[in-house]
Length: 130
Length: 133
Image 1 (cartoon, helix red, strand yellow):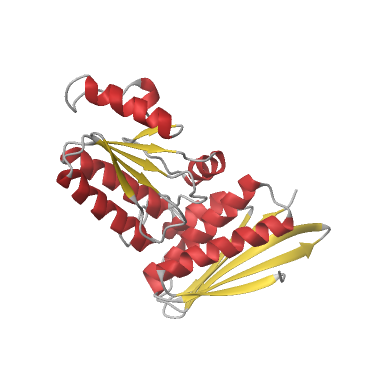
Image 2 (cartoon, rainbow over the protein chains, first blue to last red):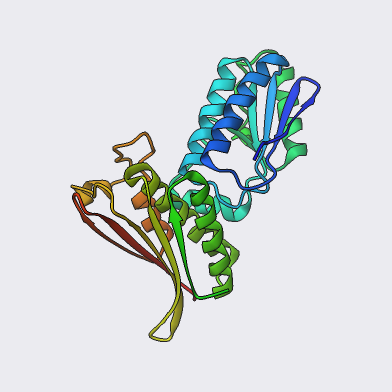
C-alpha cells in the first residue's frame, strides 16, 4: 500500500490511507527521506489518523524516519494519533520521544511553520511540540 | 462471524491480517474500542515475534466463556527455535533481534492473562486473554 506524499510549499505531507505492513512502513521511510531531498522540504507531516494500531515496529520506524529527516535538514511532525492508539502505546511502553507531534493536520502545519520560521532547524521544540 | 479463527503467520501482511481479525472478534465480544486496540496491538507484537524468530507459525483466536465471564483468547504458536531463558525474554528491553524487546513483556501488559510455554528446538506457545468486564 503506497502512501501518497503531497507537496505543500516547503512542506511534505504523507497521508496514510490504510493499515500498513512493516514493508510499507520501511518503504514510506525511504520514500520520504528521498523526496524531502528532491523537493528541498524543510518540514514533513505524517498523518497517522487512520492507523488503529501503532506497535513497537511502527514506533521504531517513525522515530528513525524523523531522525533521518533531521539529518537531511527537515523537521517531522506526526499528527493524528488516536486516543485508543495512544493508550495502547503507553501501556506497551512505547513513545515517540524526540519526535514532534500535533493533534491534527492543521495543528501540525502551524507547528511546522513556527519551527521553520524562527530561523534554522536548531530551534528547540516548544512545550507542546512533544 | 465464528467464535474461532486461525491465521497462519509467515509474513508481515499476515501480522496485519491477524490483528484485524482479532480486533473484529474483540468487537464482537463487546470490548470497548480501547480494549480492542490493546488486543490488536498485543496480537501484532506476538505475530511479529513469530515472523522474526521462528519464520512461521499461527495465531489462533477464540471467544470463550469461563466461570460466567466472556473473553477473547489469543494463542501464538510456532515450531521455531524456542526460548532458552524465558525469564530473560520477559524482561523489558531484552531482545536477541533488532527490535525494542517489548514483544513478550509488552503483550503481557496489554492483556489480562499471560502464559508462555517454550521448549528449545521445539517451539513456543504464548497464550493471552482479555476478559469482558
